[in-house]
Image (cartoon, rainbow, N blue to C red; front, side, top):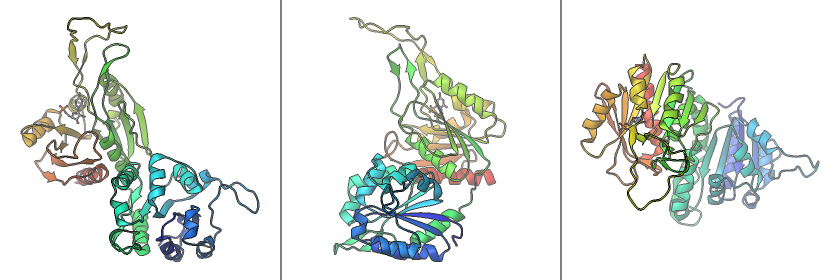
Length: 399
Ligand code: C5P
């Protein structure tokens, strides 16, 4: 039941909008308070009057209320809701959500919403399979939105395949599950490192690597959604998680990352080292830009601190997780690394699979623990890999 829950239903232009009437009815029957907002094109598929009657509230689609001239505050709507459900979500609106475009009430509320957002796409099967749509959907899951996949079946176009908006009863079930989901990691403090580090050569140059921080971001979002408090220490990347339970500290070099991690480690229950820390840094940083010359340039590199190893050596009862990227004897080397860094768990990234590792939105991993238990996973989105890892972490913490 959804008594006392405030559900914001956003309707976009798709033939599936007729199902939203049933969906709103189910929400009201389940005891929810419902506010419907619509895009202009949604109104060509279903009238605001129908949805207002079923939801028992006027439907909103403009920034101002016509009769009174009063301002419909999109920020307030975003704060009012316990959950925002976009059903149906059209290809057009998905693109706007993914890029942050804000040209109507629905997109403005989406950007302002602090509550979880559930997205229920509906479109023709070729549109649904198009790489642009897939990319947008991956992007939204990375933002932490909950994706309710379209279902298989007959489509309005006469074609048959994946693209039908999930049935209203199914969406209701997802909402119910969402609210029933226990905050299973409430009270747990997790320290994370993420992204690359940049090691300065001179005031304008550095040694870095291609890490994007996407895997770290997905793990942080999963932890936070289960109630954990995350201290997220990130090297320079464009991929930061956004959640009230995540505090971000931005750093540049391995030394800075280490110093920041040391500060939080003692009071952490869990530490997850996803950062691709540079193994070496220039021994000295030139104070002015190094001039180009005809002959070779030698830069002496000094080793960086191994953050996972240093903290592993002083850990008390913190549960620590590291990552490994190996080219040969993958499992043997991953287990050696687990021991050397005194880790409780290690995630082995497969280098041999297309779509896994740096910069990709997908990853294929095997996870080993210190008792030699191994879990092998298929190629999945990084959000799903994060779920698998946090499931294993939760299990280990409860043992
Ligand atoms: O030794 P290697 O770099 O392969 O180990 C990878 C694991 O160790 C990752 O979890 C990474 O975040 C962590 N690490 C670290 N500090 C370093 C190097 C790696 O925390 N200087």
